[in-house]
Each structure stands twice: as structure tokens, then as C-alpha cells.
Length: 82
Image 1 (cartoon, rainbow, N blue to C red):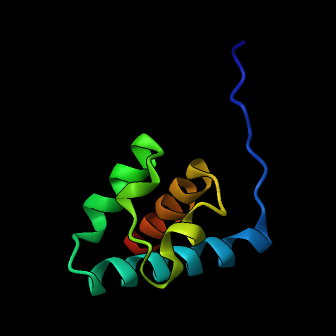
Image 2 (cartoon, rainbow, N blue to C red):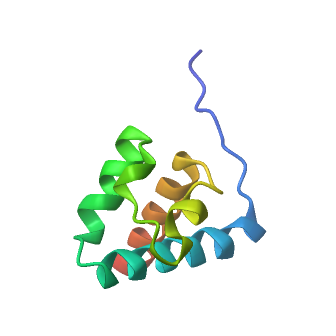
């Protein structure tokens, strides 16, 4: 297979993923965790205990797939770098 696979973009999903990431980030900050380290741990391992249950953050983050979280983070990073 020499062709690059194209992953379809879900436009309406972007806002949901962004909102979830922001909510989880804020919950981690409020509880005194390093949100970057905790989010990376969750994305790499899939272990939800990296995310606090404060303000329902753990339940929220499990609503979306880890690859979709990563996609949103990369999109936000690249959009801000231009």
C-alpha cells in the first residue's frame, strides 16, 4: 500500500473535543496536577486514572477516543503556530 490514508474530518466534533479538553485541563489545574503530563499519560496509556474525577473530568474525557483527542491537540498547536 503506497497511498496515504486519509482520515475523514468531523467538523461538528471539533468543538466538543475542544470543550472537553479545556474542561479536563481546568479540573486538573484546580486539583493541583500538571495538566500536560496527566493528559499525555492518558493519551499514551488509555488509563483514565491519569484524569481526575473532579467536575466530571474523567467521565468527560472518556466520551471521545484518544486518537480524536490527539487530533484536536495537534490541530490547535498547528493553528496557533502559523
